[in-house]
Length: 195
Ligand SMILES: O=C(CO)[C@@H](O)[C@H](O)[C@H](O)[C@H](O)COP(=O)(O)O
Ligand SMILES: [Zn+2]
Image 1 (tube, rainbow, N blue to C red):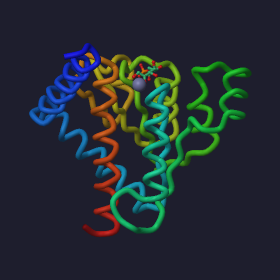
Image 2: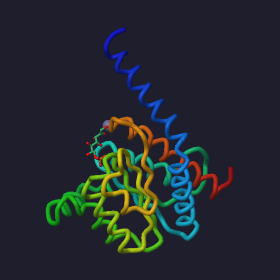
Image 3: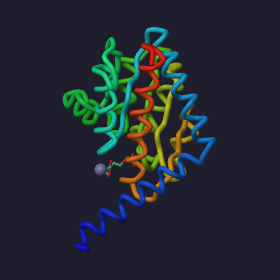
């Protein structure tokens, strides 16, 4: 077998093993269940979700926001959601004037209200802009969900619902995060608009 196919086999195997492991981690699944309930509660109260991450996790933040606003599995009313990663003017202004670690926290300070919900995505649990965003949520009464990996790093204790997934490689952790993201959106759709 050629080496790209060997790599594919290895990566598929790592993804499958990590997903099977997550299915066995009942404590982690319970945290996810609570995170879904908190998101449904925010929407029922007329609030919205803000989502942030870096690199591939920025793409995941945008992917999930698009599905809340457009749709995932069924035709229904749009749900308000915003990825904090999309406006290059805001990102460069805050990054340039206040520092990259404030690019998400300052947007939350300016846009979010108590009772909104925030989802931070970081495979390492160590990205300073996600840490600052989680601190900002605590200060503002915005409940927070964290999708992370490894030991969850310093982000873990800062989040209300910290979901730490298995996986050794960053890419494997991200593959589990996208399953969580789709399941979160699908569950919200079902709760608000029926199965
Ligand atoms: O997508 C990938 C790797 O798969 C990268 O772009 C990755 O997201 C970046 O290195 C991020 O900066 C990593 O940040 P984090 O997950 O540790 O918060
Ligand atoms: Zn990637």
